[in-house]
Structure formats: C-alpha cells, structure tokens
Image (cartoon, rainbow, N blue to C red; front, side):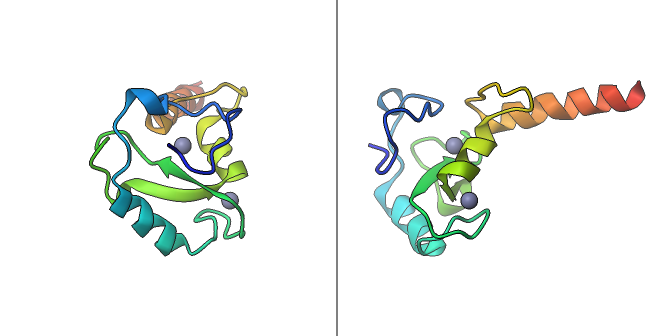
Length: 104
Ligand SMILES: [Zn+2]
Ligand SMILES: [Zn+2]
C-alpha cells in the first residue's frame, strides 16, 4: 500500500503489479524528509516518488523522494498536461523535443 496516496491519484505502475518499497527504505526516506516535501520544502502530506524504476522492489533511499502532492504531480505531468508513468521517460522525451526545437 502507498500510505497517504488517495484513490484518485493516478500513480504510474499500479501498486498491485509491482513489489512494495522495502519498509526500511520507506522509513529512511520519510525520516530524511522529516515531514517536508523534498522539492519545495513545504510541510504537507507526502508521497514517495520514484526517481526511476530500475531498482523496483529493492529501492534504496536515494531512488526515492518524498514529495507533496503538487510536486509529485509535477514530476509525472508533461507540458501538454499528459500523464507519464515513468519520469525518466518523460525527461527523455522532452530532452529530444527541446533538442529538435533548438535545431529548428
Ligand atoms: Zn512540494
Ligand atoms: Zn511519482
């Protein structure tokens, strides 16, 4: 279970189809964040955001970020308002997009 994640938050890979974050890792990230979003610093309910999915099921604290709802959403929503499951794919897409745009 993603504690604190409301049902209407359309998060990436459905929790049921992937192994859970190791409890120790979860605890470490939340201890590191100390109740504050690790992006904007606001004190808010926190989601655990995957920076990437390469260590799924054996995540370490460095693979995750505690983010408030707003910052978490921002990690997954692209410039056109579209939803990206994997933030790495999103970055790769926009990197290409901007490179091509720069070339005209
Ligand atoms: Zn935030
Ligand atoms: Zn996320």
